[in-house]
Image: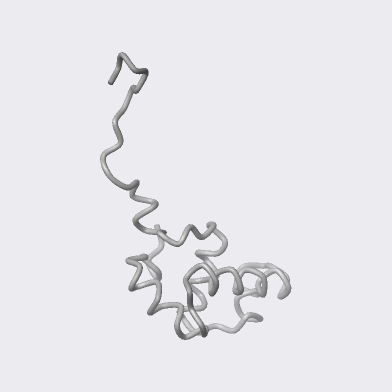
Length: 89
């Protein structure tokens, strides 16, 4: 492998990929955790010091990327994907 220029052989999925298989951004993960706690968009915006419009966009992205239909569905879908929602890293 070194002769082909490969310095390191990956050993399975990266830990970050295992924790976040939906490919959410860091901010989307924060929003997802707060959604899973049952907070409203206004409460999330206050906690993260963001505008409500920005939070609305993140909420839409989280629902879409997790394939969730409702806000309550976020935690269940994340758990099914093996995501570590609710645990700060």
